[in-house]
Length: 199
Image (cartoon, rainbow, N blue to C red; front, side):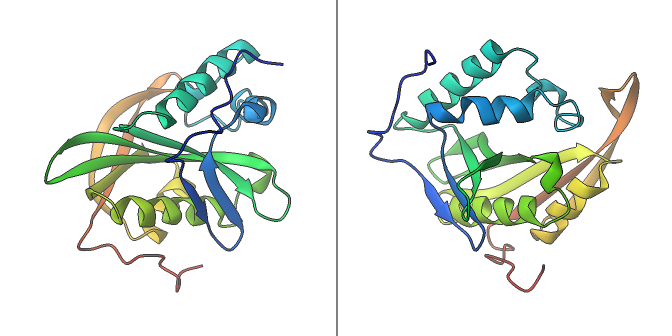
């Protein structure tokens, strides 16, 4: 169906399980559900760089994500987010190395969820699982940024235990004007894994 090679033989694949979700490596059959999300302007409104108008664009993106998952020294993890109950792909969560050495690494965090499932705590659940995973490894710091007006994303980061470190004025060109960007971060020694007491 696609030109994407099945990498199911990956011996170091990541699979994370939460009460409602499974975070796993992407696979070829994710193409159509992933494209349905990435081609939706509302889903990518705050992530215009991820918007894919054509199926071939999503196919190219998915191929690169899957190739990354095969690398022994991984610089990024882009994990599919699926509902545990139905197996439906509903989004993605990503971690990428910003800086690092033998003492540890600083990662950036990102995520998106299908719009019809917003406001159910799923992005928070996925992001927490990603933070638990990366802090159990070599991460010493994780940061994330979003437009200051994106209150839903800011709330996700706060519920994950991240703190706002700054507000970059007129930092990002979006929707025809310069907008402020809020920067969040959490250090390994500050992070409380799971944050199970916060809905």
